[in-house]
Length: 377
Image (spheres, rainbow, N blue to C red):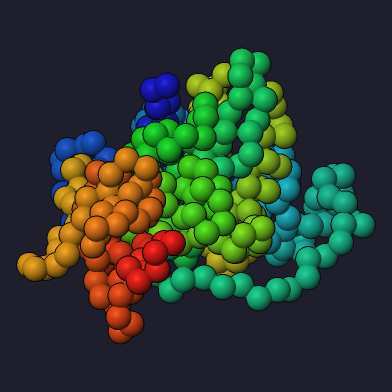
């Protein structure tokens, strides 16, 4: 299925946010977004020349989102409009949204009172309990990846693929997939890598297509990630909380998108995903980010995506073996089963401190160990 087009408004806003954040050369960022440097410069000039609250990214003839000099009733109407657009948002989120737009923003308690007066809030809702959060120190140190189950469509099923930056909670990929195969994931990841660059590591669970169950972490997809220089990590088996940010993202996606309507096909689903992803990244204040939006904390990676990754390099004189059918290698007159995912790749066998025991490595990554002393190995 071809990718659905993202709206030009969100395309421009995401480009400008990433350009301001820095991290990659401006010409490289233009290339990743498929625009000329002149177009990128024009978008930046429009953004910098805007007046507070002025919608700069839309077509110039489009009607503004608000009028200056609102009276108190109009402020109240603005509060209710945000609430109606995002029924799960409370006083603090709405206040920050109004502030970011340059509108008059009452105190969070006042906004809550407005919502209660108009029947938009449940006074009996339980308050959230504090908990300890962990996050990596900078963007692109770790991306989390998972499928959000499946959604029934009028025609078939949709498997939402979600990729999230651990530091910023920035949604790097939200794709409506027709299956959960490695080829499908690889196609979507290529698009994310081309735009945002490569992360240092990726975290995923132990199921297909990125794992073959606990203790079997290697599949053609994860081998491809290793070739790109991405460290592959898996969560603890049967502990989804290892990917807590991804699980929280899934819960929000279900509440705001998947439970709100029934989709006809993957194309309609992808269009809705694109719209909501922009809201999540650039408009919705995130309490875990001190009410910033993920786009405020994210910047693209300096590691550009190579269209044709090179095979791993080995030192001269190393013992190398090519993986054959069934994941087998021949060594010292015997066959050892390594992993079928590495079929066709060369692996290095490096001696350990124990005589007869060798580490099997794909580049710098140890993937297995063989014992040439054990005739049953």
